[in-house]
Image (cartoon, rainbow, N blue to C red; front, side, top):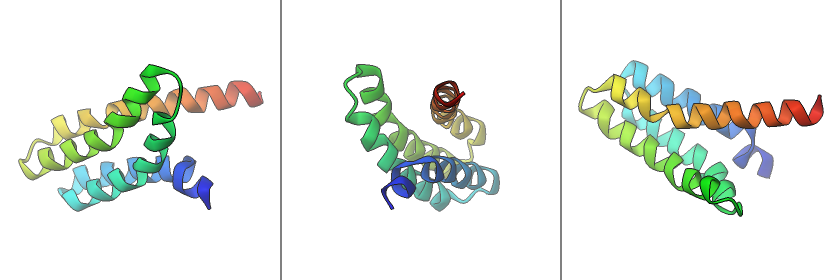
Length: 101
């Protein structure tokens, strides 16, 4: 159960909900994305590395900023708010692949 809330299903699901919300002009989907990423962000915030603490605070906040931007019709700026999550996803996927490979 915990893995579903803070693991890969939540990380990928939040990104997909938010991307679909931007594409279809549905800001409530970005709110769903913010809720889904909050478990993973909480996990990152507990990390001893300062950069991960900052990312943990920023991820849900950027989803909410993107939600605001979608309501104002600024899709490109909203999409740019999801770039940090995409980079974090790529980073952790690479770490997992290297550790298992």
